[in-house]
Image (cartoon, rainbow, N blue to C red; front, side, top):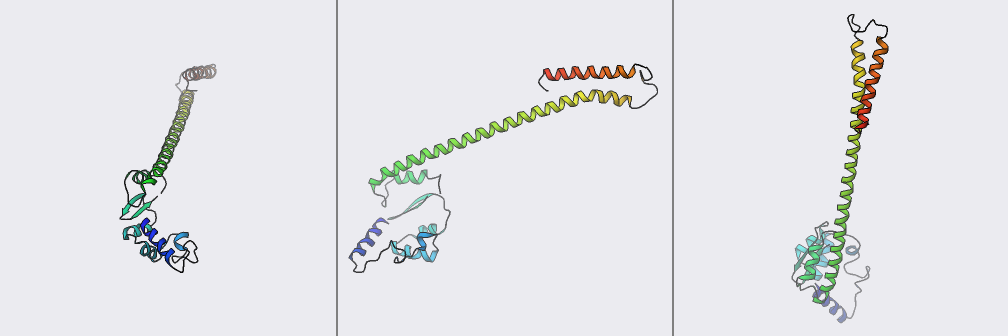
Length: 208
């Protein structure tokens, strides 16, 4: 591809009527290829001008390709997405390619180092966010466990008077202390003492 660009530049310098390819209005390719994704018809002119491989043209027209680096003779086709650029940069910085000047490999190695550092930082941030999320979920689980224990403790405390009052609520004739004058105060006192000791026990164990 570099060789074709140089040939086009030499032909342009030799011609009497020079064409300014940098100006959209004068460029034979127009401004569509630069400003947005080209169609197959629009890109066919560029493919014919530079002698591009049909597979490279197909990948260039079809958007959202995976990052990759492919060599088609003198043409080097590169697709760049954001994170998985390690392998293409490694190919550009280590493998001898006809379209890449050996003097530029050092710059590609520098770019590869920056990319690797940024990727490591992203990985570290992802791990940190995951750790924070797991810690938060653990705190939520502990809080839910504490709430469940409190509910269980209060339910156990309330169960004692509920059971006793439920038994005396049956209004049977032959029940102990049913017609005794001090039956009600005694039952109320026993229930209060039982609930107090249950509360103390749950409080001591950290359930309340």
